[in-house]
Amino acid sequence: MSVDGTTALKNLNNIYNSIHNFIALAEKGNSSDIALKLRHLEASLEQLKEAIDSTSDIIGNENYQRARIADLNRRITLKDGLINSFRNGQCSFGT
Image 1 (spheres, rainbow, N blue to C red):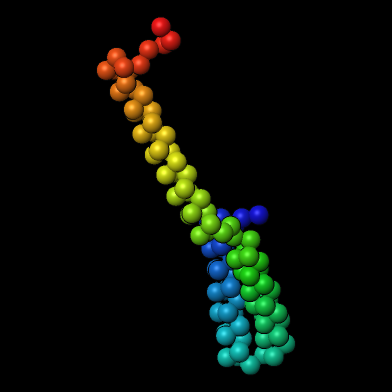
Image 2 (image 1 turned 90 degrees about the vertical axis):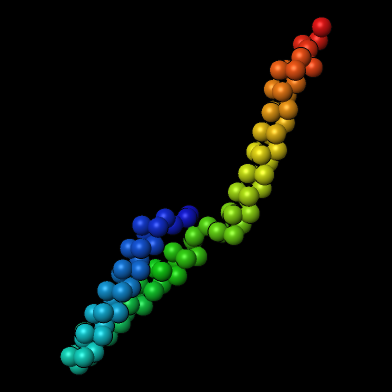
């Protein structure tokens, strides 16, 4: 399962909010709230780790896309050659 940019951004925002809340509570010194927020931060970090792990292989995908583009360019060149041969009357339909 791949993660889109919106989901990744949401995960990052959750982590930011968790860290912000944790720091705010640490400044107040309320230990029970700090422990709860720390657990929430840990859960948010685990979600981010899962999101990163589920992201498709970007390098492999780039290499695949480059190979596909090269193949499409090769096919275009072949088709252009065929079209030019028809224009020049060099190709016939079996007659």
